[in-house]
Length: 98
Image 1: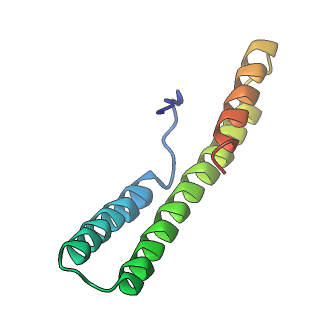
Image 2: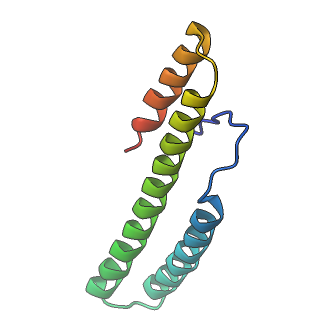
């Protein structure tokens, strides 16, 4: 499931996150090659663990960046019940992925 969050402000770490995920993608492809080559399961599991940690860190960075940015933006704009509730709803949606 893909959820598109509307944001009019650039997030500070998106370029870094994209670079991390591209490295993880390359690493994952090398793991697939390890499987095809019949490498030992312990080596494969170790490499999968490394990819998993890289993806988890990228996700945390993305969510933290969004929360920081979203909350900062919410504090800067004038308060209205409609925007406050949509900000709270967006916050609730993204925290489900922590």
